[in-house]
Image (cartoon, rainbow, N blue to C red; front, side, top):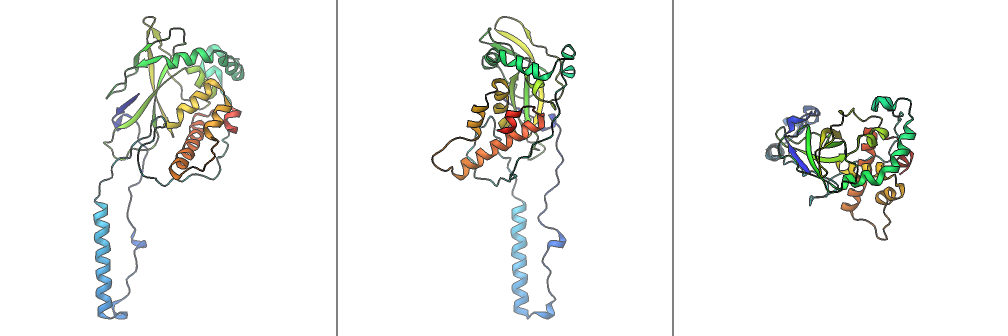
Length: 283
């Protein structure tokens, strides 16, 4: 579910305006005394043509690049992707459960994570059976949803995930993806997770409920579904198979770039949220 929101609804990262060249980078033109008139005319003609090409190129409008949502790739040409050779292991601190819920004061986060795994199937049933109508212009603080499986555990929040990258123009709409979630699952694993408002999940009937909507800025929104799925299932083998699929034939450039981008995006999101999980770090 994607809601197109105006860029002014979210904070904009500052970015410097692009420039074609600087005065210090321009080619020095030797004195005319050191060249004959023919060479001088050819050199002047060459510089004029080069300047005209740059002026034409600078007037080409920059079209916004299509956003990649939930891992769906668009038919765009291969772009240069700069990634580090190694992904550093961030220095993480453990989750303080008393900050998540005062009632959990004195309870270790390891115990909470262990107990959550016992209810994984019920919580996943609540996520998969949730349906909602995404807003088209304005993101509300609460959202009415319908639940097709009343046996599942109703999510407590709806995350409005958007990219931390700045939009191409100030008037470009920002892509936002809605993800239902259970607060305790994310809070018990993410030491850097921003404080979520108190859950307002209320059942108006057996098949409908109202949940809070919380904006969440991440480096790679397309990789968040994979990360959240792992936090629920804790299936490191499935995560490893997605990140490192076995293939008898080498991947082409587009598939390889997409795959590397997913790995880097998962790592970036985990670092941003401060995910405390040894198996996830090993993958």
